[in-house]
Image 1 (cartoon, rainbow, N blue to C red):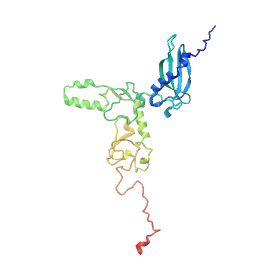
Image 2 (cartoon, rainbow, N blue to C red; image 1 turned 180 degrees about the horizontal axis):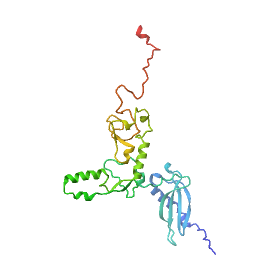
Image 3 (tube, one colour; image 1 turned 90 degrees about the horizontal axis):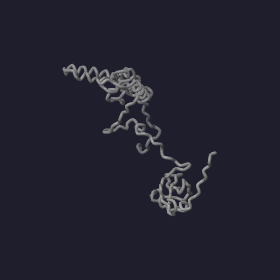
Image 4 (cartoon, rainbow, N blue to C red; image 1 turned 90 degrees about the vertical axis):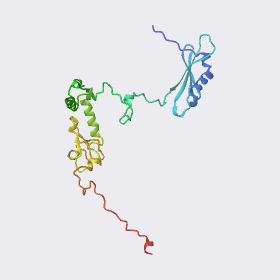
Length: 259
């Protein structure tokens, strides 16, 4: 037959030590302040927690919890712990997110390092090509090295299929893709532009780099169906958008001009 644990009786010494608990809370709270006494709760034999309101406007619904204890037959309360806890309706702090999940594009600044995890799905093992470095002829070794680099060898990790797909999706949906005002008003696509330099590898099927120093995407990746007003086939007398004819205000004339 299961036994039911009797409710703990309030400890008269600890329950009366409100001033001791409040002093400890005020010491911990500092500028946050300590409000009215909200009551107490027995935690165990000779262990009790007093609760005080937190008046700070940034912590509405929070309260101070001061836990007191005393040795057997002792008549003096000892402070065990002082903490600030959320109550019902309190606004808790945001859930902690690891740094690796908080980093965003553009967060890497000059001088900072961004570690790449070993299990990054955007990468896969490559080939170091270390055996090529033993070539006795520097000229032949340089030529071999160029071929190896062009094939993507000589690197411990290379872009995976998932990495290429992720990059392609991001570029297509961004300012370098076809769905934006720049392409809408362009005279033709980048694919037919003389300033368009196609990427190598599988990404070159859909993307290239703009080399027009006057174009808004100069030095940046663009899709083959992107476009801008800097297309190489645009001649001097062409205009992407017709501007309205000049409008003159002939309704009112300064009378003083004719006096």
